[in-house]
Length: 268
Image (cartoon, rainbow, N blue to C red):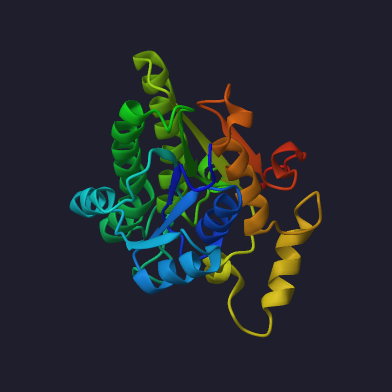
């Protein structure tokens, strides 16, 4: 198929993993639509991707916004949706995220972006892909979860819960589409410690950032934090026909953390 003849929509494309995924898919020949709640950030990514990339403002929590966005898409078959928009909830909403101090305001804010945004994106992508068939080659939905969704994280209850739900939703979408005979696959990438702006809440922006990052890297068997570009490579593979027999699964990118021997539980 000619370059640019198939469409890839990426949410949260203004920064981090979403931006890296948009740029990577553009290099693979997709016409990329970079979306973000901040239009100027999405436009910067589209500009970096080069023509025929487009930018759209999209608040993933808003179903009407999804409908407007899909109406505004270029008239091409939708081949890929990457649900990369996400927030940690730290800083944006007051209060902590441990089980005792977590507020409904924080919980709903985090779930609104990280879970509801994914559910809405999957719904609209399924409708588009089931009819157009991804341009004859099938469609691929790739959702971005987190290693936090596979663990108990006492200080990030809302974030961890939202990412665990993303994994579950992805599996359900995959089985639904396969059972219905739709040419739609759905998979999840599960990043660990990836050096993106989202980690600023943990690493900070001060002079001790490098030291904090080094402490995080020391726990990773590969000895370093990952990059957004490395996650984007995994997304590109799941978006491609090279993964045509892969659906309903999670691709973990954590530098070996999941395979490492767990630390013995603390005793009081």
